Image (tube, rainbow, N blue to C red; front, top):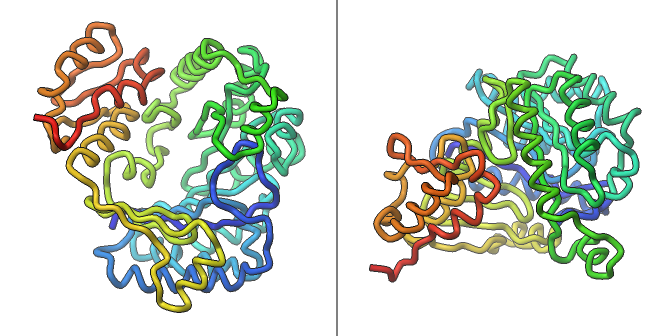
Length: 376
């Protein structure tokens, strides 16, 4: 098992754009952390090998409260760091979580990498997104503290494609991030997910999303600035200096098996996809009774092939043709030739690789190359 993901489903407040599973109520947090520990113990007994990476994600780590240490120790990040000195143990945190004491505690627990949910350096944007922190006192201060804390690596998240965002504003955001010496950046274009506050605002005409051309121009500027700064564009939304790429997420994109712990967490073993129930109470009850708390899907050859296309094409390495179980090259030769001729796709050393122009249309190109199980 290459990676272990632990979903911490607590947040101080709901972000307007977020469709992840979380709770702002802390009433059952102790019982939930106990249930998550039981899931770890049960599933690690059945999994093969040790986790080379651990990723704590999903919400505010500090909201694990007095059970935080138990939550961190249940998959034993400190033990992983000792038994595997090169283990990558990532913790998602938010600027309002960060102080010198918390950073020291996380290092003692074995955390080696911090992923900071900055999202913006402008207070008006943070308010629009429903974030719990502010720009100057928390976002920038937390970056400075993390940079000096001595973690093996760290990264920040930024969001572009916001309503009325100009290219100059986005340029300013990138400049601030680069000026603070970040070794890694995850930058995401704002998307309107169903059943979110943002989706409601858009449907009511209260918020107007920017034109595709504006978002595309911001993505181009992002790629150019990161290239100039020496950060490799190793996945559509991720840029890192050598030695600072996310090993955990890279394993996802390469189709390596992973284990997900906690409500709503997903797992993959190479043939099956499994996902836990997205309800804290149902998750705890099922675990206490020894009942299933997950659903399972056995993937077909076409589904495995299409997933390899969708994830592999997002990376700078592309997707190896020999990773594709079904004959994508034969079945979709005309589409492949069309994208190669248009300058969106390359065939390099047995791999399908997107060009810079093609990265704008990664999901669309992958979908055009999808295959079905019943095709000849």
